[in-house]
Image (cartoon, rainbow, N blue to C red; front, side, top):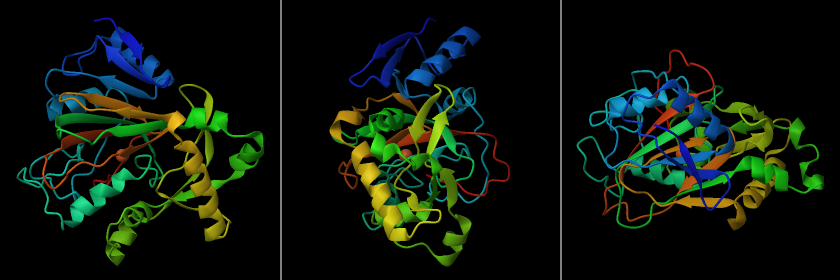
Length: 297
Ligand SMILES: [Fe+2]
């Protein structure tokens, strides 16, 4: 198969034709996909039916390490999707029924409607996320993206000044509570302590500078909390202006790949107590993670 790239309404988003992740892939096609992902931070691959979990994991492993721990699947749906490599991002419980509105797990899923970068709260960050659509609601639930390289380029020089010296703290629980979820227990807090990352880094595949912030960002090292959050919020507001946003409307069988090292994204609302949304994610990491103990979102 030969790769064909169709650029979409934002220059950083593309639909990839000539790819079926469910089938074995030649080295040339894989090389071309990786090359496309250096330019296009969001890539859509359509299929007439979703990949199996095994096919999804196998393809993801071609793009980077996706090692996972076996225990403590926090989403609680491990019975239905038992693969340690797959994060269950839908609104379904262990047996495929829609979560009750009061379910704590649903509250945490809804925090994904905040602009974020997957796994920024880990020292070993996420590179590519691959999300596959197994069931989609009749309306809503688009996923929106911004490319933070474009955002950094567009910042006024006066605002860019000094950002490269800053180190940001990222906390999983910060965004869960910000999104309306309940506060974590002391055990949960200890299980996921914040990570620190530079606010600006060079995105290796493209060589372009990019901002690295997200709803998990809860502080700046050496800064008072209030001042830090004011800057983070200002940058988040700048980044998420409509001219930077790409929205994907899901179709059954779609597999979306996005590069967390240079994007933010968010889920958008749908009637999650009435319609089923079954979307499953694998996540590649900067480098292999050993002895992971929890599944995360
Ligand atoms: Fe996400």
